[in-house]
Image (cartoon, rainbow, N blue to C red; front, side, top):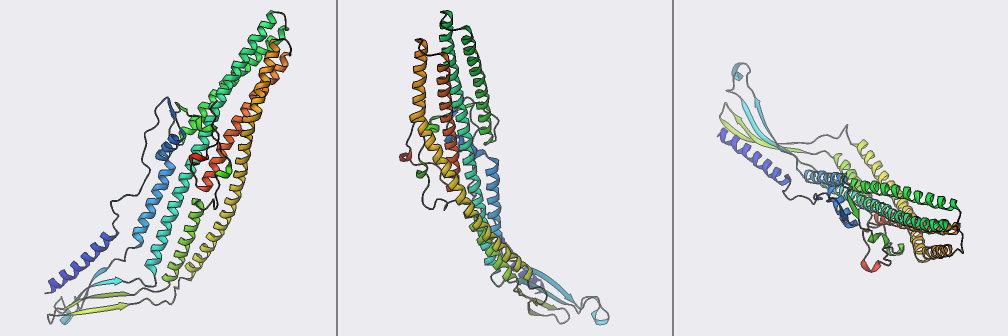
Length: 442
């Protein structure tokens, strides 16, 4: 009978432990994680969307953020676990003297004890873990948005470098054409010989500028490839979207920062801190331990059930220090959230203004300045060929045209950089098709 009682108690304890363990065991269903994408093939023209997709799939920072989400998921599962029961054996009246020699007069107690959490400890712990998971999700989304922003900026920088190469080639072609005209006029004794030297210097300068622009383009592509952990820069870029610009007002909506993951992270962190405060308050309430078992009297061959209850006396540790600490952490999180909201609003206003300036600058350069500079250059070149204008007029008109095109290229680059910043702050990715206003592909 004693053996059967022990087996019954042990079996009950093991079954209970297995049930609790099974409840807390992670399921085979995995969370969504960025899947790996094969590196870009060599000599391939890639678009911004493809560059973004490749970076999202291969970024080590994004994978680390996804792993942090997995950590928070494990904490969620663990937060709901109940304390394990304890099995104990107690022997009395053994190995003594006289009638208590040996185990003939022994009293053996076999029992199971269980700590019972009260005061809302488990629910507070679960809430803190849930909010911790929300924090990790917001951090993951923030990392993802940062990566998208960085890809857009790096792509714009690379396309701008590509356009600079195209401008340098045009400049070289113009310089070569001017040199050809100057040589003809020098040979016809219509211009002094030093004008030919000036034209040759201008051509050599344009060749150096082209060489530098090509190196800068290679560097820009390497910077872009580094965002998807690759050293292969043997690809070209699609420039079509580089010339698509829309007013900044089309990008900014009411409550623009509502979806910003940084603010959502701080909101979740505030809720997590409040849950931890509730947990510390609950920890000040002592948890009782209940126990039950069977006592075997060896001398009389009799058995009886035993039950017990123990409650810690809250006399020395009232958890006041941890409660005060939790209060301060809640207040700190509130202050951080308020500061972040002000900083985010200020940063968004600044980037929006810069974006609007770049938009108007690009529009003015494209529609007014560049056409006027192009026309002035054509007239000066025709006048020079007809002998009506001096060579300096041609050089000045050529320089003005090149500078206008370079300014347009810089304005577009600045526009896309600021747009990427605004979209990061507002968690907006792409405009709708009807938002597109300009399309230019010189």
